[in-house]
Figure 1 (tube, one colour):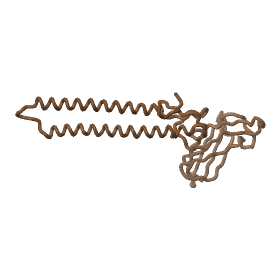
Figure 2 (cartoon, helix red, strand yellow):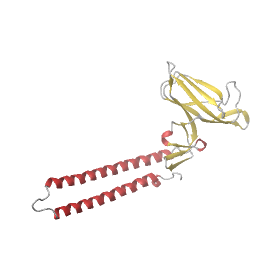
Figure 3 (spheres, rainbow, N blue to C red):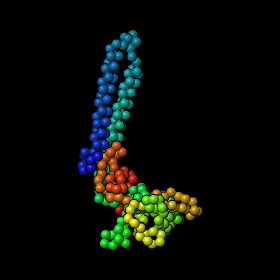
Length: 231
């Protein structure tokens, strides 16, 4: 995969141009065949039983319908190409910025000058409806819960959560990779959907078989549509 540096080198746009050319070639071939067939029918018709005008009109109308469908397809391809180019430009502007995307990973590291000071990568939650109670549980790589963070009631939206790298007893945890889980409940105590979000810095934008992809380094590759928040 190659990094997108110029939207004019967009493979998707090139593919749509090729598809448009193929459609035009197919339509031209269809028109030639239709006219050849129509002329042949007129030349070989029975003089005592000539073709009905309505038959000729019907066949021409069918060709016009094919033309209309092809024009519509070309219009849709042009619109899709414009959307793709716009998304490419938007994605290129994200390079170097931190974003929140679906995921549970949190990386914890120490300050080189003071190992007791811990720094965790940013993470967040996506709440789809008002929540009266939200608990964020952080677990180590073995799956053991090491910290629970109770949040104030929140309305629907995307929120960033801070973690100081300490466990429930206030002890500094070892450096490494941790995971976050979110449990949310409404005012009646019913569980509601809330999603954990991980962060990453956009290092490049690339195209693959899955379409436009953002490279977030250790966080992995994500679609532009996966972004929940730009920080």
